[in-house]
Length: 489
Image (cartoon, helix red, strand yellow):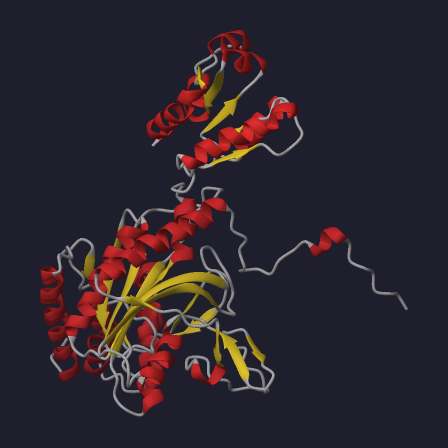
């Protein structure tokens, strides 16, 4: 019988899928995003709270345990008193528990924001992880369209603050969807869910693909077959007319929506709700090309109870091989009046949204927006006898607020320059024997130098011109480097 082979050290250096390692560019991007986004939340009057990473599994709501081990969608373990606890899968379920627990002493409505990692035991994909950062805002205890409109407008401001260049926030309401289903006499719950899921795939499958899912069904490229809703041709036509009713402005979309579905109580309520939200959005300065009404937005079929909305990037994104990558939604939310209420046995309305900070950073990385992140100025060490002088120079730079480091390896100048390049250093400081004798130092602008070097034809010309390199008195080091950094921005 063969013995189990001991794994080699190299084979141990592996990590689970969906748990990304992050280097400086992504870490800084995420931290900067969180700082800018939470500034928006504070500006709108929201207060920050932080809850723990674990919650009792039965408090999470969305993934209530139905087996011996509640691991569907979440990561769970038993604590020392044999109760199942789970890593939070979002920041909303912990808020619901917190609000219910402290409701008697909280200001009402309670307006909070939170940020931190969340975990989902799901299949990872492009821009989709098992561990990722969320940055949320919610209002608990407020009915009516004003709180929803505020969340939608603030989400647009938060996406802009996070660094998104081209995006929109797409808005719908569950009342409108219910009214559509009532108008085509789709009463069976399974049929209703199938229709809504088909509409949710419009941007990916197009009208013909959705039509197949509304009818008998659809076979995808892999050969997998999805059974459809079984609607007849007339009802499919009416659903597709609803799906296509989005127009250039929110007002035009409302007119189109009012014309495509036979009036009923739920549908009229949805139109009225969107009309009120539109007026409030205009008052808050949310333009039509940023916040749009989109009748195909569905979201959490068993979670949301009113208006729903998603933030989506509009830039075309490709991977390292030039293939198109669909990041999809980078944030979303809506009204969820039942979540807090289930802890208290009384009606407590709530509305809010999440921004996927990790997904935003991943998308920006794919578009090259993180490539320009600058590393530290590197002070080279050409003579170990004078290493203390290199540290004095770096300390002087840091005192002036310039990020800097001293080379800590044992290699010569060429490898040190290569190290600085790999660190993304904007400049290096060089002090050799000649500089020490003259009371000067040499500063090489690595960004400008690299650009100028492209036009140089041979090594002799390069050595004579020394592109991007200046020699200055030691007392002018800080001012010279500040000028270089400002010119690089």
